[in-house]
Amino acid sequence: MDYLADRMGPLGTESAFEVLAQAKGLEKQGKRILHFEIGEPDFDTPAPVIEAAKQALDDGWTHYVPAAGIDMLKEAIQEYIERDRGFRPESEQIVVTPGAKPIIFNTVMALVNPGDEVILQDPGFPIYGSLVDFVGGTIKAVELKEENEFRMTPDEVNEQISPKTKLIILNSPQNPTGGVLTKADIEGIADICEDNNVHLLTDEVYSQILYDMKHYSPAVRDQCNERTILLEGFSKTYAMTGWRMGYGVMPKELAKRFTQLNINTISCTSAFSQVACATALRMDQSGVTDMVAKFRERRDVIVNMLNDVNGFTCLKPEGAFYVYPNISGTGMISSDVKEVLMNQVGIAALPGTAFGYTGTKHMRFSYATGVETIREGMEMIQKHFN
Image 1: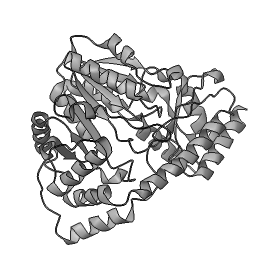
Image 2: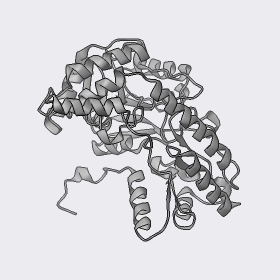
Image 3: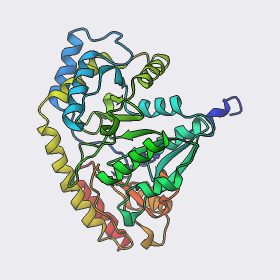
């Protein structure tokens, strides 16, 4: 396609949707596929949120609203951040977007020049690297090691830091590994950002899905007043993936630029959806606790059963709803295992290479599905490999 602008060449994708399309194609041919590829909670959006959206439509929340978000939602976000992170951001620090990805996009667009370096986790959410490539930045990848519970340590970040470093991107709890950074990890990396005057994007969309560890946020250090951009959303915590609602908390001057980007791309985020999200943050949160308890049960089942598959070893993740088993004992690379699972076993899962160059020895399974489906799927894998 030589008519396309050159900048489109490096733009990547998210392989989960490609694998989903492949699985759907096989299903159309009559093949039964069990889905472990998509990172989407299988729970319904809470009823109070749905009712709030309906009422908002009846109340006329169907028109343009401010590009950075409505006051009602911003106030709910302030309350939530104060309750959960321990500081209260100012309204001018908050920018609401349709989904969390625009905050990633806006961060990279606003901060990274061609040649600037961005430190990323590898494996990691593929959109980070895709956007850095898109703007001509240079990726400096930190390999997440299995023996270190897939944590990015301050020492490893120090090995990659240079005068060209413009941005560090953290994700904890992490996709695809389920790894969680410790307080010492977080503080050490925040120190590095301060010492080198580097911005820090902390993607915390899985912050409420934790099992035995406490969530620590680097945003506490500067309360998002100097260099930290806190990314949060509603998709994972409240099973609202289709609503496409997210937000960022950041320094005021950067928030002005994000608002400009909103105006130039989306105008504003859906009005009635913002009203519903304010309800989500303010309602009784016991439903979230119940959901996490179910995820814990699913995690334990899938980890135990994967560890009984010949050639597989699987760590128990501390957060999110993914496992990242090592499949090197099969003698195969992850892309080949993915094809075997899809075409011979009837399981849709993602190769580790969907999340970075280091993923040849790993697969990612999402356990955002029922326990019975997990048991059936893992028994099918055991039958094939054992």
